[in-house]
Length: 558
Image (cartoon, rainbow, N blue to C red):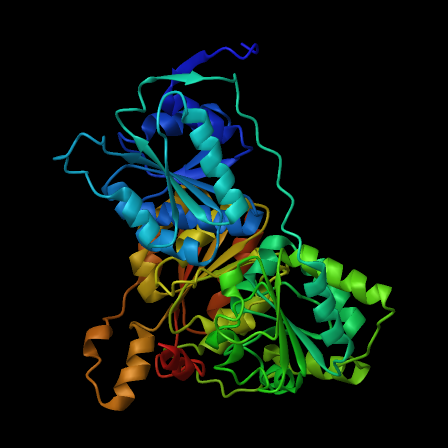
């Protein structure tokens, strides 16, 4: 009916699923239980493809990786109680990384005080930085669902929508026959005087640099930053989560921080003005302050007021959307007729090109038993097509893919390390592969993370994904070994017997191979040529005696 009178449209669960589907959702992830089966079926009836994970943590990771690649809200569906508690580590990562997610979670009825499933779901969700919301009644179900989806989209945060199981089966009362997507809100516009103040700063700069973070990726500000950088003669760098934002540009230095090439680490401290765009400039990004000169002027653009100056004092604060703010700043400088060479000379561009990680020399410490992780990463980078995605788990190995595996753009880079939790990378890679099945996706993980997420190998095989699972296998929690052993501590408890992860992968339905030298990587070429997609797991036996150069800095940060 369209005359404003109420209309009964099925159960609350049906309406919630249909409303979420109507927001343009294409894919959803999760694990089904009695508390979320009906709403998930309604999602599917609305045209959403549902991808069943093997663990709720993996399901949220998949939605997270999917969102990072597509820019859309990731959707996940879980059972109440343990179904929700199983999501917590992945949900925390998504909250810290500002990934827009909607998690549909069953909830124990308010009156079921003695239910085994009963926990304070609201408090639990909010304790990790996500937003807790609820379907309140049969009359508000559609509005509740749409509100939760919109909050995830606008606030760029995970929202968990609680679905009380006593309300779900009740007949819904809806005042509209459908809930189409709400119009997109215009991004927040910065104050003109703040933009002018940054323009004043840049006009007086001799050697400006731009450091862009995940906020710039979320805002889609790459083109605007490139144009501004060219106008002012700036060096370009990113935080680790924004890697790929400036791929292919001649004055792009790559990741700022512990993963920065030596030449980039020489150049960045020479900047007299640093424009920070959507980045927290934490101790990782600045290498504990060493990459930003003490007398450098810093202007910081962010949508969050509390993010500005949180880790490094800002001389000028600009509150607003990264894309809009940079565009307005460039317009203001154009109006003033400002164009500067800054850092940019042909000679410097040539030096930057010659001194990237791929050109840095090192002593190859491969043996008959083990491959050097640097040699492994460089060889694989040459074998893979340029159009690929890379998801990186946490652990001692994580710098190797960050330094040596190229990505075509920032949406092809999935870096779930906001919480520094081991075991999230494989799930994120599965979601990224589902988002873009037309290209190979690499899950760069350690053996510790592989065992934590082992069940999702079956998911990748069942879904026939073009997923390359690259396991840097040192048969240990390498970070703890290399940090504590030199101090004289017993590290035997964080070392493990060798395991055949390739055989485990084959048992799960994937292809698997053990890698001890570059010749063993021939399997990758054959896998890339296969017409029927399937995951390939490389159990790369990396030299466990090699200590990553960024490790000391990592433990120094705590």
